[in-house]
Image 1 (cartoon, one colour):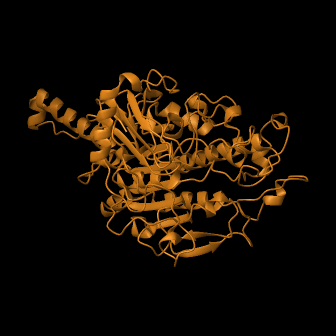
Image 2 (cartoon, helix red, strand yellow):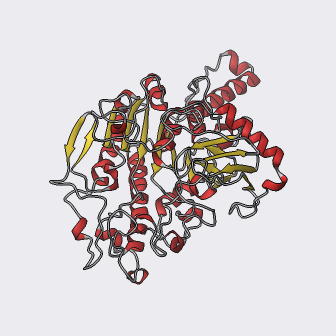
Image 3 (spheres, helix red, strand yellow):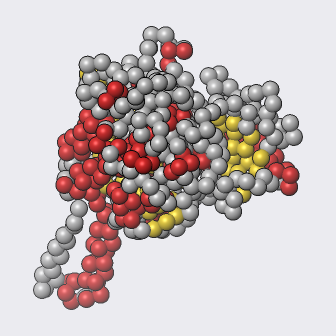
Amino acid sequence: MTQIIFIVVSPNSLLMKHPIALIASILALLISSIAIAATPRNVVFILADDLGWGELGSYGQKKINTPNLDLLAKEGMRFTQHYSGAPVCAPSRNVLMTGKHLGHTEIRGNLQAKVHFPQFNQGQHPISASTQTLAMHFQAAGFATGAMGKWGLGPVGSTGDPNKKGFDLFFGYNCQAVAHSFYPKFLWRNDQQVQINKKAIPGHKKKPTGEVTIAEYTGETYASTPILQEALGFIEKNKGQKFFLYLPLTEPHVAMHPPQTSVDEYPIEWDDEPYRGQSGYLPHPRPRAGYAALISDLDRHVGAVVKKLREAGILDDTLIIFTSDNGTTHMAADPKFGIGGVDATFFNSTAGLRGFKGSVFEGGLRVPMIVRYPAAVKAGSVSDEVGYFADWFPTLCAACDLKAPEKLDGINLWPAITGEGKAAERNPLLWVYPEYGGQVAVRIGDKKVLRRNLKTKRPEPWEVYDVVKDPSEKNNLAASEQALIEQAVSILQKQTDENELFPLVIPAAKD
């Protein structure tokens, strides 16, 4: 929003008789104006689902079209060492919402609510009533708050209901399992089901023989369409006041369900055989084109949000953050098709990083991250500042002049984002992940210490990588880094609370 300052000075005033005082007054007003402009009125946090490190043009992607996100990077700052909160959906979102790392969060894996709460037939294990969220903090500060997309932190009516966790309006998928299909029977608007299809198209099916078609798995309403419309409506409704909008969009998480028109944008020569559901989720006649279409659709959603902010006259008053909840979809037993038919090798989705979703290697945790806010963020800039999801709570508080709660695990990245200096001294990044065999990781400086298969009969030994010099994690330095391993183990043991839902024993350095 452009600010116009009128300075009216009487010819007989003291300021006219003292030019230096006049200049000082003008400078004070200008500095005050700049300070106001440097504080965003609104925040839009856009979270992709399973988007890989190398799947945007601005991060080196050569085959998938992402013009809107590439423009966002051109107009803002792109981070090269940003990490998700966890290698999979629910715990990563929990870290984001609470500012606590996986050693302190209660949700450390994808657990269905019905396991411990049989009254719920959908949704994931709820965050507790006492848990304070980023949205609650902004809501208490007078921001209108909205979330449109995929929640995954507690069913409607539970302690993790998004309306109980700081959101005035929630619209979308409450349950991650339901979100495996882009054609569910209904979505949620707060505590009300909104039917969008006569019947749900299941997100999982195999078709070993016969023709595979897109039409066979298409319903009346593609869920992303009403979700996006709700987001745009929220912006329109609240354009005259400050707001916090959280957009955990579902693309490019499989099942592969993009509209035919989006698939047709990509070369038919890409696909020489259909995907038949052999690696989970739905079949698709053109899986490479289908996956690229999901990411291009995600890009179009971001473009629509930016366009709406511009039309509302508040684009440059709004801090926009874009990132992903974890790395790209992992490989499967099938030599050609990964989970859901995704061919990550064809797209170079990890851009050389090791590992995928579900892994504490870089490919599972390092994610694209873009920030746009022209009043304080230099256009076209690139930052190698190390950060992760636990940092967003204190960072967004600092950006919006709010006092952050005490005892958050993250640090304030805002000085690094604005170029005003380095972020606060970096405390080690930490992941305690009991799924996929049981994994832990700690990044200390340029090095990452990790261990895998902790819940199996044959745990892997400790591994150490210099992830700056060796982002592909090919050169294990464990033999010469015993002291660093001992430091990492000490951090893990001190920073990991007991958790009955997601137990994981931290072994000693020499075990």
